[in-house]
Image (cartoon, rainbow, N blue to C red; front, side, top):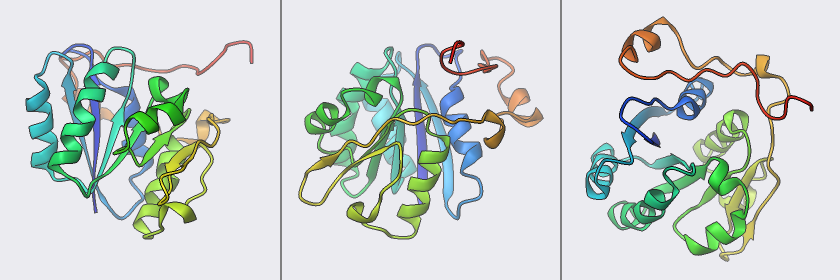
Length: 192
């Protein structure tokens, strides 16, 4: 099974922390995981072609304020090109009003609500185990059932950042030497 984690960054010089966290925290799974980073300045058709050329069985897309409108244009196009590809969206722009988003974009199979390292990992494992949507019950995962109903579930957080794998190693830093590298020292509200 091939998984493509896709980030549409605000600028070419940016890198995506989110897909790197997901990538690193899913390395123990028996699937081929690749990352694709483009920017909002890339043409829609070019982005769709790169996704099509990768031929993923599962497509993960991170959704932020700077890319959500482009993602909304991309989703139907990708679905037409790869009708059997499972589409998973995640990020701040789909973690709220999730049900409405999934109703507006029926090609989206799952939405990761909240912090995704563990939830995405568990979802991939369930898909690798060939579970159908009705069997999948994972905190932080909204899903579309076979009868087209939507289970929103709740957004989750990673309670202990020491439980997740750091997204960079020396090789990653070298490969990103001409880009902005994002780094987290904490998450969420500093008063919680």
